[in-house]
Image 1 (tube, one colour):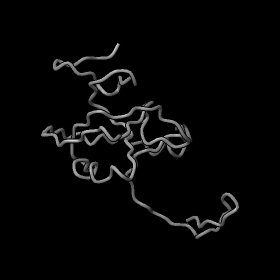
Image 2 (cartoon, helix red, strand yellow):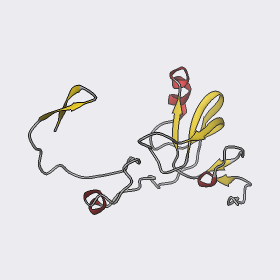
Image 3 (cartoon, rainbow, N blue to C red):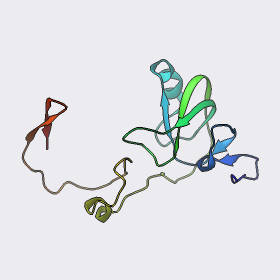
Image 4 (cartoon, helix red, strand yellow):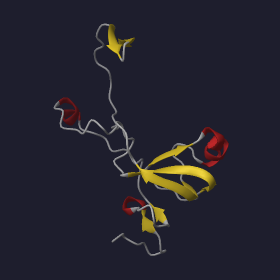
Length: 136
């Protein structure tokens, strides 16, 4: 059962594709190029917005932007508006360096990392899908 807040909405982390009224979690959002002006107007890094009428599909593929099992899609009937909501939580999920080094992470998820390069090796040329790529 999803957690319902006092104003009658359900937290986004409990989202199901057949329900409505979600909020409050980090989720991957996509949109087609035709909707770029609509998305750019109100969807800025660090700014909160309301999104009504959106698509919801399972998050699949090799690399996922969040651990949420669904991704949100801006569609033709979507309405994106600014929000006066201000929460200082950056929604970063910083990963301990030890977890990266010891290989205990699921390699299908992208991770948030803040760090400083302390050494850069030589430039290497490697084959990737029969094409030469440079690796640093």
